[in-house]
Length: 366
Image 1 (cartoon, rainbow, N blue to C red):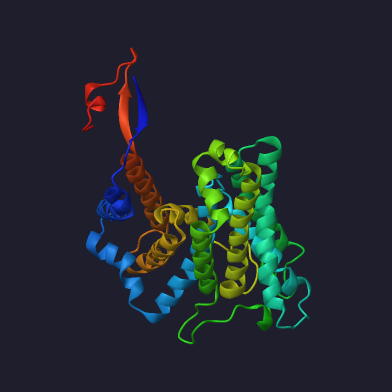
Image 2 (cartoon, rainbow, N blue to C red):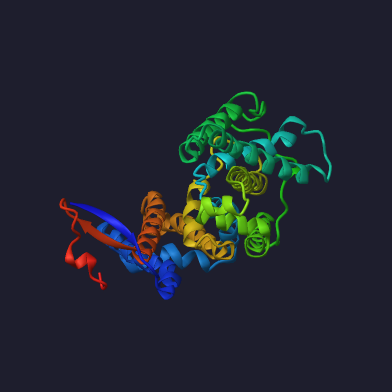
């Protein structure tokens, strides 16, 4: 006996619409059960996780700081996934963007100019795009799997960053700590408001989301993404190049991740150090799918996933749980999002050895 998924002729539009909400509800229920098994009050734990971080102005600023890279990376990934190119290595592109964008304030710290910050942002985006170009080149040239290549490159980027801040880029006046020199005032993203630390990265993320939404809805390139993602053969008949789409989608997502990387370092950290991300590049995959690969939906899902980071920190202090609970919530959310989508779009069929499907699976109500 084996199990097969048979695509439904027509999926309910209502269920497709409420699928992310259903996934969130199921995640909360699973989280409540998890806290109960840990011996914690589920109501108090969920309150600490999802409500308490929204009650203070400073925590809203922190929410914006954590949502910015998630939205920016996920917007780029949505183009990849809708074109059927699977970039899993945004974390590495995030890191390389931070490294490339930090070259100016680290290697030429004496240069003080209003041009420093814009050049840093451009260099960060280019660095992320070029790093994403590696799996694009290998896929179009040697037909390699972009999933494996982009994922393995994450560890190369992280080890390269670790080598830099412990070696040639280490601050000689930093008391032997593994970090670079602190950025000058001209190399730091300014804060949006005086009431907190939120900086211009959230503006970059929102602008990118609206721009990509406009491209996907009203421009020829967006139509090419949709057609080639749905059927590469149909795209070829229309004269669209799948090879060019591989390059375009991967490098666009890499540029978004690279811009997120240098924005995070310049806006929130102020120098390079061995760890600059709590896993934004991987969490952004959940953000993209929870937002239905729609840039406007990604804005909302980005804030939801950012809340798990902030809530995890609050829960550690208020109820004394491990920081790994944040990862559990994020994993549960991805699991339920994919599960709900699968059950909405597909029908499960049980195929026995003689080739006959079970009567239940064949029935129209199965």
